[in-house]
Amino acid sequence: MIAMTTMLSCVHRHAEKPEPEPEPDARRKISLNIPITLGRATAIDSSNWPTVGGVELGKMLFFDKRLSADNSISCASCHKPERAFSDSATFSKGVGGSLGLRNAMALQNLIFEKNLFWDGRSNKLWQQALEPIKDPLEMAHSLVDMVSRIGSIPQYSQKFKEVFNTSTPTADLVGKAIAQFETTLLSGNSKYDRYIMGTDTFTAAEKRGEQLFFTHPIVNRNLNLRGGNCGDCHLQGTLGGVQVGFEGFKNNGIQTHFGTGSDFGLERVTGNLADRGKFKIPSLRNVAVTAPYMHNGSLKTLEEVLDHYNHPELFSRPHVDALIVEASNEDPLIATSLALTPQEKADIIAFLKTLTDEEYLNKHKE
View (cartoon, one colour):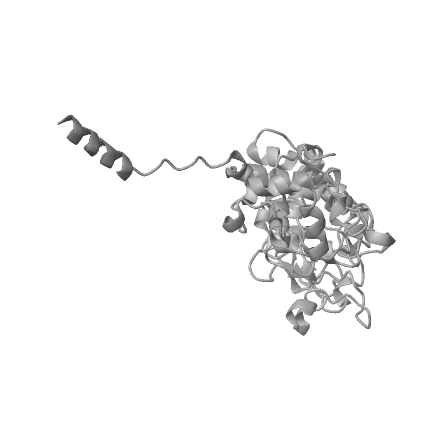
């Protein structure tokens, strides 16, 4: 009887499934604390959800100059944390002092951005992260050589093993790690956010600026509604453009002509003449610290930006978007620009300065 009991016990033990090994802490998915004032995130990559170790690894790579061909620049060289991950230069310097062709965009709230780059040519954050590495005007490094260099560094081999279960990195895994870090770059604690939540107050000028910002001007015999028309393109929440197809790309008249050597923007991606001179509508969060402005960095101050929309020839420039042409504080029969007063421009700028998130600007300083 004892022998029979022992045999049955052995059979029972062999039938039990072994307990699964606990997931390494480095691969534990993190919670994204999305500020409520940003709205619903529309571009989260569920296939590359950030993990504890992935975010740490991605940040290491983002700040590592060894990703460039001559070890001289990192992603952070052109995307500086204290400037909302933008650059103060009109065009950022790459390897050997070469200059890029467009202004470095701010990096923030990227889980809301479906089309990346000024011309929208990428729709995957991890793929976008690899483009500057191989761009000859930026980091100028072949992905093969970059991966070989990173793979030869013991610290990275260990980190890739912990995060991706392989000590041999690939270009895709480098991009995915950087994207995991960038996914956590969430900015939603500005004075504007606190005002919306009822925990802060606006000055009279900031209130006037907010109203102007979100008002489309209407001038006719029955109504004279003055507005800044900013909110027609920069929507509530992220204060960026529409994230449906390429609707969030507009020609705002910053280029006065198009010819040989011109930057045709979205047209280069779609091949559609109607997209000539269209560029991504950027988020205006932290806009007070992200100068210079526009895809070509041609405007140095917020005052110059408002002057641009007040330019007396704006509406006649080639391919200017209808949302701009159809908005003026003048009689529509004679209107040639937005026609804001100096006080209205000052009020809008006062509002724009409430979009600065100091916590975000200081979070990732080296």
